Image 1 (cartoon, one colour):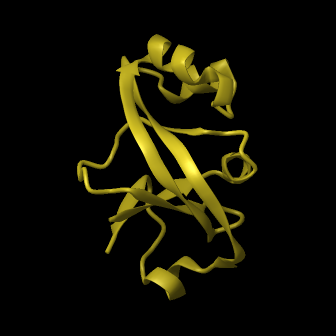
Image 2: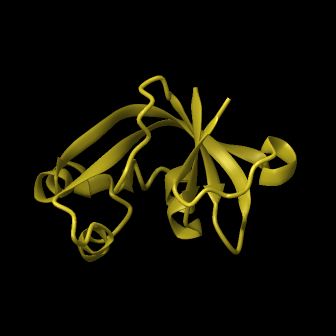
Length: 123
């Protein structure tokens, strides 16, 4: 099963050039059968640009999560803790086998869905 994630343009670029190996989330999908992430890049790009396999999903105390992932976070420590403000724990999706599409795809015409706030299951 696949899930569609909305990702900011600057983070999507880091995913697909290998500098960002963890995608952080405050909430995560419940379905354990999700093995692949399709990346929708939010405005101003507003297109699906690639996909990656899920290596593992970590859930941990924020300090421990940062210490385990900071070398390939793709974000600053300040951004990380601001993103998780008012949370004690967070998720880190390990990015594995990423692939950028040759041509970006329009979300509506390819998948028939609107951009998700966080994520959307694809069947």
